[in-house]
Length: 196
Image (cartoon, rainbow, N blue to C red; front, top):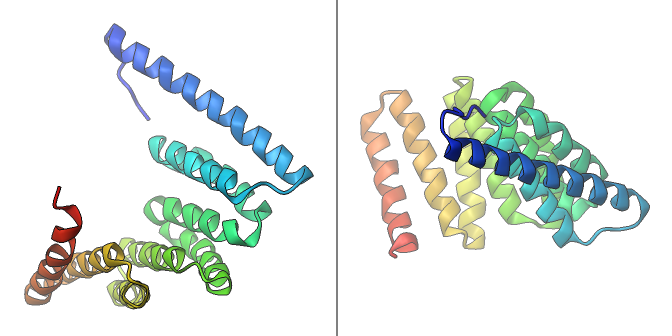
């Protein structure tokens, strides 16, 4: 992340961010060490994964993917699906070809544990990775799988995301009628979710 340090306010913001990041790194190290010594509650591991994801997002993903991967490799199965999905999410945008192995691991574990929300998200990020490499057919197949799982488990927001992503792929393929259909459908589904 590049922050221009041209004013005292931007320098102060940067300093606070650095302190926050260093505290999170200490927390990650502590939790990872203790995880190897005794079981960690899923809630704590979930906080760790989300924090590492936030860091990875804030810094362009690369530097903290290894932390997420360490957590995923050492987590209990019911938390590993989320961790692998987060690694795949990060890679889907910067190195899409490498995202698939982690998203497939996430899907395998999510199927075994019945974590349907993670299944939806993993299909979504596989679709995004396929889109990023220009394979729109496989991309839309993944979004349709996301939509199928989401509909069968009542995840309306995931149905809207899937429809939106299919519409975006249709735009890339210059199929404007289908793009309009899917994007309108996404809007119709999403409006009641965000009526505030």
